[in-house]
Image (cartoon, rainbow, N blue to C red):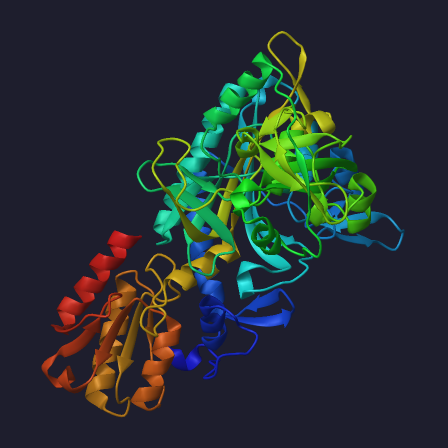
Length: 575
């Protein structure tokens, strides 16, 4: 394409609302423009990148045996009621009514719609397995849209759904999608990790993995081992096995040690730090008691004073939909005191005890009374060890749960998520098939999503090199940017036109800057246009030489033939 014809409106100043590099560069370069908070239009440059990502996704999904379809963005609310998610999904679900007051939602995902379609179309095991996918806009009413395309109210997503007659078939489909995702993200030029994850609002009955692009601005924490292949989202990351907790429980079961508690007056204490100073102890010697509301019921969760409760693990253990800290009034009603003075001794609600707390010989807890704490509290003696599990966030540097080596933390941007849904939706929505014996069985489902527009932002975030945006060749809006320094110089312009024509003939997609602009303007715009290969036609034009700059920023002088062949070879290799 000729740049004089390209709708590319650049910005010289960084917009104030853009907090992260990818957002700044895509606004400055004219890739996207905000229409409303969290809602963006894709201008020609942005649409070209998005289309190239979509092409990679389609190629790999088709190769993995999935078939493309397209479902409506507007979904009947009764489908969400059938699945049980209408009230559970929360405020992010955009609800609306038509003129007849029938309720609809704007689809944040399509499990309900695809299940309703397949339950009508597939009745026999002979039509299984099947894997269907689409690329379509999704809608979520984010409380705080931010980071441009990384967290918006409208976004482009690829979602796929597999249907099998047994769990072995689901294993095969899951592995095929997992491997397809690895190929997709590699072809997009991303540095990423696949990590164990929590199923969240989608739900499921089996393993689930997130694919994370490593980036400092990522909103998720990726936990990985420094030696083995273990990796997980912080929500899912396991604490190392606590054998001491089991030993402690066995020891208590073998005898009945007496309580040796001591009430301690702690007046005026307003924080954990003040409490440790007052008692002259470390926070690891404290037992922190937090009251949670889980699906409408109250629970106490105990972790060490230097740890944080992982709400996702609490929900997972209780197989619950929602878990949140109780309001101050409820804490006082249950414990008789504020949160800082809450403790497990004498509580009548279920008590979830973290492994580390269960392994303690004794600790210090709140006394369920203002200005009172209790020393010498013994797990299993002064409160029950009925619900012992892993309820805390892991800490960087602690042992890996697989091999014992230190774990590391990285920031990550979620690119995609694969789930084993099992029968969660098929049972709720009566999606069954007849097996070989004529018996009705629920369909076994898998779900596989990629945030296509988020992938675009993640690539941009990883592709800013020394004040220049350098897209990978596989997704770049233009693979080669040809820049004649002086368009009024007939020799330079003629040579640039020759290169442009030969690259197009070779099947490449070059951009020719044929504008009558100063060289400095052209180079600044080239930094924003992001082509990984730049061919500058300048003083060497008369001798048939050009300046070549690759994605690595290294410059060299080449003949026209060498430059064309090098561009063709690199492009073919990266496709």
